[in-house]
Image 1: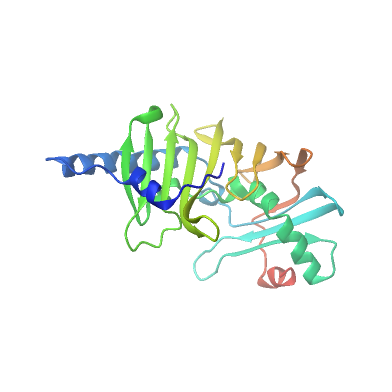
Image 2 (image 1 turned 135 degrees about the vertical axis):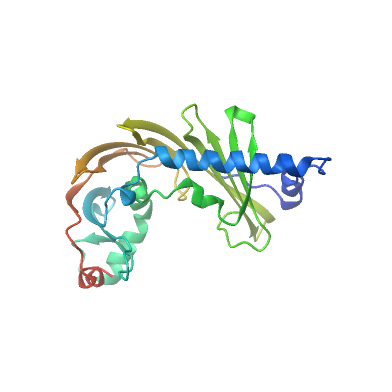
Length: 264
């Protein structure tokens, strides 16, 4: 959900009350608890890049107005002197400009399929942010951007479930709108988690984080001892539901720089 609020009103909502005597000590305890919740969630969530995934190549079909297109994703994690690389493209389209246009139009599909694979630690969101804890809604970690920080968002709210996992993440960005003036953009992602041994993986997301309202359900398989999506059930309010079946999956087989350049 995206919401827009004029900046003066927003600032009144976000500004904390004047500190009372002893407030600094309470603030430190609040920040410590808020950050501890992020780190505790990180220990629970399965991230393939932390479990041996070095490179991955996969394909999945998407039904479009131009027919069924085959999306191709190549990804290589950084390691030592080797830089990270990532290519998202469409097979079977010789014209480079058209291929790039198709891939850009399917951006949301790529994001949904790769989300559980590229999931980053929640604690990284706290870099350049002030943190505080709230007992509202069962417990929340609230992050607000520090002055001069280069953090990508102005505020982030994590709402925790009983397992200590985020059931909701809201990201807030202040921006200047040509018609409305100063306002904020708010995006929300909600999660349902599934158990896989000692870890949890994303079972379902409901999100507008990438600009398209999307509900996606995930199915998984284990390849070379790494848990990866095998199918994504995509539910889009503006289109027919689709099953994005992961095909031609190759893991840790090495992807050369030449192969990445080929699809640029």
